[in-house]
Amino acid sequence: MNIFDVNWIAVIAAALAGFLVGGIWYGPIMGKKWMGAVGLTEEEIQGGNMGKIYGGAFVFSLVASWTLAHTFATYAIDLSFTVKVLTAFGVALGFIVPAIGTNYLFSQKGKALFFIDAGYWLLFYTAMGVVHAWLG
Image 1 (cartoon, rainbow, N blue to C red):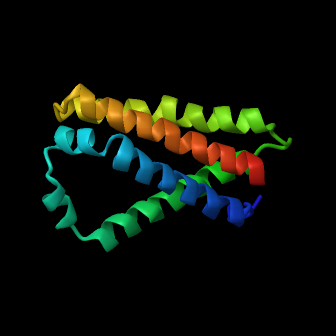
Image 2: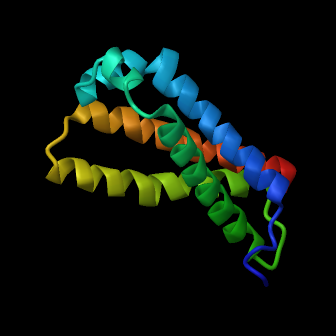
Image 3: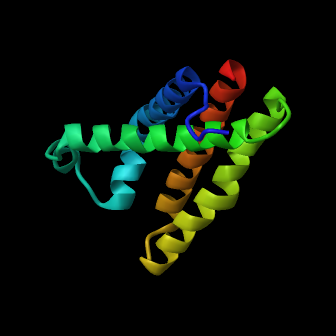
């Protein structure tokens, strides 16, 4: 199997879905709490290079989505909708959450930030899993 033999429409759509989840999660749902947990003001955030931040975040979303699509494509059988969604959730729960948790422990970041960010990654990967399951 060629590493580029994936459903590219699903890859892009899933990356967009994860990106959308981030906009909602870090906007109206957890935006203020997240700003407090990282110690940034709205003015400081708006002073950042938004093209670089959002562009880079979307590229990372594409990499994550492609990796998920490639993982699904390596199986010799068609995976069910539920298996794809649970696998995506499991990637976040088993790899992403422990990785950020370890980083946050050593950098002595607060529990609030951990739970905000861990919740996001669980939702991000679940959203991508739903899109890949639906379009794949």
